Length: 292
Image 1: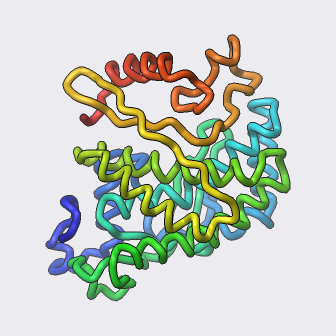
Image 2 (image 1 turned 120 degrees about the vertical axis):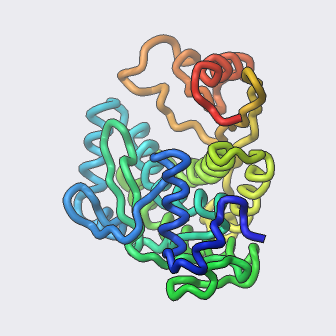
Image 3 (image 1 turned 180 degrees about the vertical axis):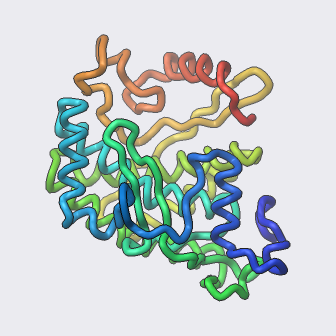
């Protein structure tokens, strides 16, 4: 059965499946969507060219200038580039059980030194999906046998893209390869529960789904993947599922941060104590427009 957001009308209107899913993601939140059919140019850089065209060095230098710490700059750069691979693919999988091709020659990014990943796009409308998908007969569709086969297809191609990128980041900054892959793992779970809650769904099945994706990815990762843990927060009218990341990003070491280290930890940082984490997340979520 197709996921709840998938429109059966796509099979009759001929609307490209991947573009339709990307549009639904953008409808949930502009930051959750991605562009389809965008080519490099201007601020948009082909991910395949980033490591040998000076872009990585420029992005890293900007982050060092901003935060004053090379290990932190490497952490943030690795996270931004991992997000370009993970966010669009996992979001589409969670929402519609569809997956854009995470091959490195298919991804285009726009990176801002201050705001981080400012946009991600895919060049081709190719989409992997299930036999039951109404778009399975589309010319751009790659039909996988079942969900496990779909997950393995995603994992193989995502790992092949991430490995050289994260290795290139590690060669430029003293932030270990295990931690870089840990950030990938955190991005998978974080994206899954965020999309589920934006779509008004129960986030716990999405969390379990993310564990299946990580199990597939772990086969192809060069190191053991650290795992985040779920962290529910009660808010007026219900509950929001957050996570405690498995890997610290070192943001508390930024020269722009003030106060003692314990006050500078991110709310989802594994170094922060759960009592203050819950209090801070509760206060922030209670004052925000959050789907419950």
